[in-house]
Each structure stands twice: as structure tokens, then as C-alpha cells.
Length: 524
Ligand code: DCP
Ligand code: MG
Image 1: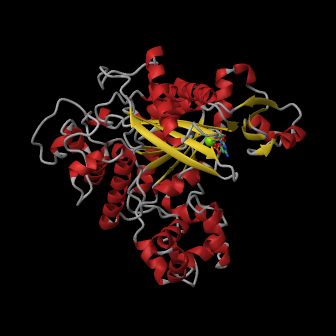
Image 2: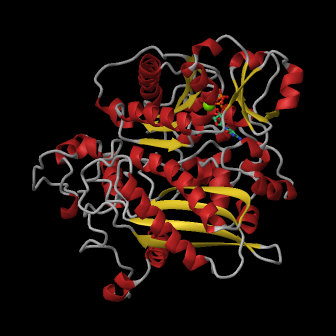
Image 3: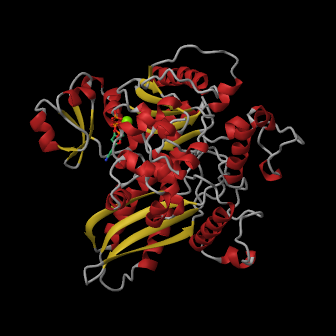
């Protein structure tokens, strides 16, 4: 419908693109207003009402809306910001812990509305609430919040009504975030992730906007330049400019084969679809990380006692994150950056099993390390260090990193925010559409209530969760095809992971999942 009034250049490409457009989902994108600044104001209410900037090194990474009204912008240098706004109050934002904590609390509230929540960086989330809309018997007549350039044209598929209902749920979510955490947010409500993210940014702060599909091309075109489409980064933009593509319209109507030559078939298709506001990528449930760690860089360290001291500080920091995560690690990895005489540096990492928590069962939430445990970890790390650095000769290191991994599965671990809570219960066996046996802890009755396409997605999601066995190498552990399991077991964990990752890649190529655009939204 939308492409028809575009131009006389209407091509085969746009017919193909148009025919793949669907409006059957309701996606909410939530973005926290001036995130770091809000956290600081919540922790210290005396900052409220004053222009506030959050500094990291010599940059204002964000600022509250009072500061924005006085000319301060995100990512401005401190010097310029103070020139623009001499009354600017600066708070140090280098310790991310408080922001991570708030982000985690927000994520948990969002999860109480839908199991389909995808976290994007610390301050953005996508929530797929399609299944809630389909189940609801209420009819909503009013949109909550703004409508992006409302058109009279109403799509016949019923999407407008679904999106209206979505806007009411978005309002409930935002109200709850405000009531429980005191945090204000913006929301975008649309039928895909791309459009939800874009439309949410049209009214800020503390507002929400719904996009009906009839206006999606208007929204996309308002971005003007392809570089403003999430997922089109600077490298891709340079290539597009080299092809003379410097407007959204040009990207829409460039011959697909020209794009394929420059980007390959997959990316070419993806970016052209995005230029029409089409994005079939699904909201991917954010799972717990496979490893938790931190690194610290410094000018140089030349003695073992300095290394020990640095490792102790790093361990404190990393263990706090492990504790918060709640799962018990079984592996620890040390990363070292060595500085050679020629002045070039090389990173090396070594990993080993850790047994300092022997006796603690996997379903006990872990706590702080006691003195003895801490000693054991540091000794293990120092042993790894000696494998990387020959301490009999002179050496210099400029970075140390600690990372824990080998966590038990998401299903039985004390993970707070996993999809489990929607699906774990006393199991009712032999329902028609059962997840495989090893996932039998999932409550099939909940699955049965979901619409078929969502059910399929959930089943896929469940399949992707790690195995529920808590032993380090469970009996049914994954082993790449054609590799002797016995030999595989003997390999270092890193090599095992590498082989498994390769195997996974191969499988993905074979199953050719379409439109898997997950990476394009990722923030650094
Ligand atoms: N951030 C950062 N470094 C960057 C960009 C962002 O540290 N280069 C941090 C600070 C922000 C947070 O990430 O508070 C979220 O980034 P946003 O771009 O969403 O900005 P804000 O949430 O601060 O403001 P807005 O109200 O515009 O969303
Ligand atoms: Mg934000």
C-alpha cells in the first residue's frame, strides 16, 4: 500500500518488499529518559531541578532535560558544556554499577508484563506483547499518548486496534516503572522493532507515541539520511555514499543487485527492507550472559606483588557482578596484555576450573567470597599468570582481566529473570505440543494458551536455552558432529566453545533463518 504512492521508479524490488510486510505484532520500545542523570537524581534528590551533566573523562555522556534546555548536549565536552551552561552541576558517571542495578530492576518489571523482553544496552528494551492483545476481549477505542501523524487510512488487518490496545499496555508499563522505581521513560508502539524504536523518539521526555502502519513510510522518510536508520553504521554509510545513496528514497529504489554487489545478498535485502520500515526480526529474550568479567588497563606493572594487588581489586569488582547474577561459576579465565621490548603488546588468556566452592550446591544463591575462597581464587589466577608470563625474565603487563564462566543452566540456576517463571510448574505430561523431554519442566498449559506462531517462537527459545544439567559436562552435552565425544571432553573449554560456536554457525546457515537482524540494534 505505502510503496504505491512513492514514485514512478516503482521497481520489482519494492513489490517484493511490500509483499513481505506484515502488521501482526505489537512491539513496545522503552527508552529511559536521560538515563544516568535520572539515576543520579533518584539517588540524590537535591539534584532535581538543577541542570545536571554526567561526566566520564572529559565528556558529558548525558545530561538532564534542564541542562538540555540550556544548550548542553549529550557527548559534549565538559569545557563546551560549562561554556554553554556555567551553572551545570557535574556528577561522575564512571562507576556503572548503579546504572546496571537500575537497568536490571527495570528489566524485571518489564518481564512481569511479557516473557518476550529484549534488553538493548542498559537503557532500552523491546517488549513483544502480541500474545496479550490477542487474548484480550476488551476493545480499546482510544490511543494512550500521541499518534504519529495519524492517517485516516485504516489497514484492514486490524492492526490499528491492536496497536491502540498496545498503547494502553505501554502506559501501564510506564506507570509501573514510575511508581516502583521513580523512573520516567519514553515508549514507542508499533508493529515491528525498528518502527517502535524510531517512533518512541518522536516525543521526549516522559511520553509515548503509537505508529499506525499507514504512517510508517512517513516516519522512515523523516529520518532523511540512511545513516539515521538503526543498523546502518558509519562503515555501511560510507559505502552507501560511495554508491551515491544519500537519501532514504534512493536506498528504497536502488536496484537490489547493485546493493548485493556492495554488501552481499543478506545485508542488501536487510537494509533495503529497513528503508521501507520493514523489520521481521523478533524480540529475542535476553538470556543470562555466558561469562561475567572485567578488565583493567594501566601504564605498566612489573612485579608479581603488583599483579596480585590488581587482581584482588578486580576480583572484588567481578565477584560483585557474579553474586548479583546468582549462578555459581565453574571456570575462571585470566587475560593478560604483555608489553614486549619492541613496544608492541599481545593479549593472552588462560582458563581453568575452579573448585573453591566445592560442596555448595548449584541451587544455592552464592554470596560474598570468604577470605579462604578469595585466597584460592587469587592463587589460581597467579598460577594462570605464570603460564602466560615467564616470571624468571623481566616482563611488563598493561592489562589484567578476570572472567568467570561455566555457569549452570538458565533453567535450574537461581536466575531471577529467565523465561522459566512463565513456564516452570509441576509438569503435565503428554500434552500434544510438548517441548522435548529434557525441557519437560516447562508448563505446557501456558504454551497451549499462546497463539500458534508465538508458541513456535517460545519452543525455539526454549531449545536455545542451555541444558538443565548442572554438571560441568552433562551427559547429553553438545558435541560437534563428527568429533569423538571422548576427545572433545578432553579439549580445553575455550577450544570446545570455539568448536561449538562453529557448529552453531553451520547449523544457522543450513536452517537459513530469515531476517535475523538482531545485531543491528546492538549498542556498544
Ligand atoms: N551513554 C554513554 N556513552 C555514550 C552514549 C550513552 O555512557 N556514548 C550512556 C549515558 C546515557 C545512557 O547511556 O544516560 C543511555 O543513552 P541514551 O542515548 O538513551 O541517552 P539518555 O537516556 O541519557 O537520554 P535520552 O533521554 O535522550 O534517552
Ligand atoms: Mg535514554
